[in-house]
Image 1: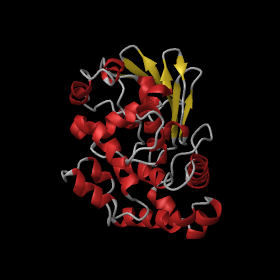
Image 2: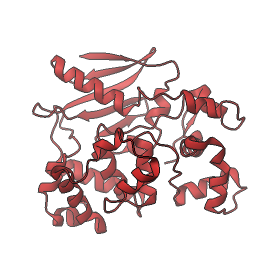
Image 3: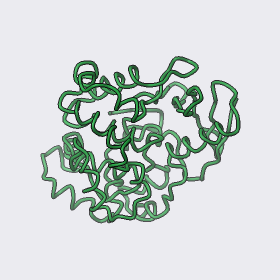
Amino acid sequence: MRISIPTTPTFNFRRTAISHGWYDLPPFELNLDNWALSRVIDLGKARPLTVVISEGRRAVKVELARDVGQRAIEKVTRDVRHMLRLDDDMSQFYDAVEHDPDFSWIASSGAGRMLRAPTVFEDLVKMICTTNCSWALTDKMINGLVAALGRESNDRRRTFPTPEAMASAPEKFYRDEVRAGYRAPYLKELAERVISGDVDVEGWLTSELPSAELKREMKRVKGVGDYAAENMLKLVGRYDGLALDSWVRGKFARIRNDARKTSDKKIQRYYSRFGEWRGLALWCDMTRDWLEDDGPALKW
């Protein structure tokens, strides 16, 4: 079964799929041989469904692993639109960069949409698991969570666990099996707070708070500091934070500062001309070489 979702002329499927490391973490899986992005969709009470997303002509094609009803089709469509940011208006960002010689490629290539999960909860758990560790450890933690607590789809792949599933697991599970270290109690507590309504992470998508206040709200979650909060802001559509870490600082030094170590203030000044879009301009700058004209050149 296949569905087709129309896209705007500025949408770039490949740039979106590899926009950051989420493509490398389950329930996502990116096949670079045919540029197909797989994802397990949670259908609630129904059995989860694996879908394969690829680019079409002014559309994305979504192959469903089995026939489903209209309600499931609507859920898949909503999730795909959300994950690929198909409803994001990038026109103001493109206006901000198109006349800058070093950044005009962003608008002409349709870059700037950052892949995200169907839920803010999943994005937040993954973001907590990227802090203060290697990507290899992040990968291990997320694979452990999905394998142990996710629901099985028709092809035995698994969903990302729900808050209820994560809250039901003991702290020992996060410490000993997921190898989450100091994050172990934080992950369990986050799930419990989401279930109780103490923190409404999905509400961050539509929050009317200024970015600085929303960032403070995000930092109320244990395990979320400036880096994680500013990255989460990008995933809910706020791009004024830079989310500087050692990788970004090193990459900036190599491509913008003759390989010399630089200060965070200098990085901030360099991208300040893009105003509220400065964080997205920085990220596009850092990841431009992840996709070359003749194919992928991923540096994650």
